Length: 381
Image 1 (cartoon, one colour):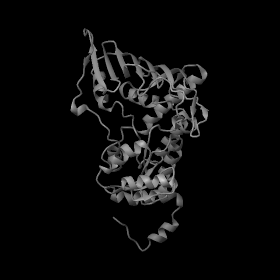
Image 2 (cartoon, rainbow, N blue to C red):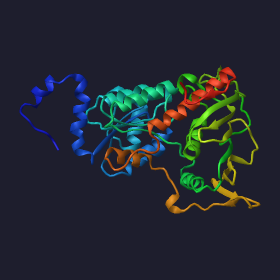
Image 3 (cartoon, rainbow, N blue to C red):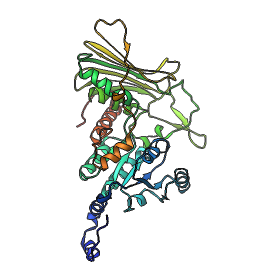
């Protein structure tokens, strides 16, 4: 629907530039069945999940893509039949035709692009990890609160979606009673140390910030089950202390590749969690126990196999396999949820910025504990 008026140009001239995002948003709101999306960053997750996810939704046009170089932008546009390429992310945000952006850059750019996108009146789907640190995360949250009519979503941790509802139902039904401890070891994709391994952006604090391996996304999943932690203590090490950059020279890396975290939850109960990318010959890549006063739940994944859920309570000699009902089986529907939220059909649950800020605060608390050797209380002051 187009608004026509002989006085429209005169009126717009009188409007402050600061009001233009609101005007654009207002005018686009008449036609949310047709949503134009701009891609900023087109890495592995964007190409394997977000682009196919958007393409499945009726009324969505992937209008523009801006990757790290013109060449890579053109390659992505050609591969996925995207209409246009943009010189950089600012060009995408300044394009009045674009309603929403999907941010798939490294974490160091998530905060500035998200805030700028919201200020330009764009809905935002931002890749996890949310930001470099909790300070940036809070800035993103504040910016979203200034734009309550815009949708802002962080890509959720996908590893446990299939089981989350079932686990939460067991806990709500008092199956395990009061939580005593969550005890977990995650070594997904880990192997014995390779001292000639390449430097990845995840090993560089300038790009990754306080994020450590896949620690944050597992904590996000844990929060879905038992809520946030209120204390953290951590020890960690960089077993592979140097990695090879593009020219083959050795570069020191300070982000841990093996970490042990203990803490307590707001709801009660303790946590002991190990995350590692440098241990080998383990039978299970994921092994998490929820142990309570009445029962135990176990989520486990053997190497090369699918995750399985087991549970047992008082009187059971062994844990029995839990078959997840189809209606309770969660799945990846990030792009669908994002677009539905823009169209007013549902609210963001996976993951809203308030929740993402909590895992960023926990991430910062882990980093602070590593630095100081002290237990850190949450939420951060």
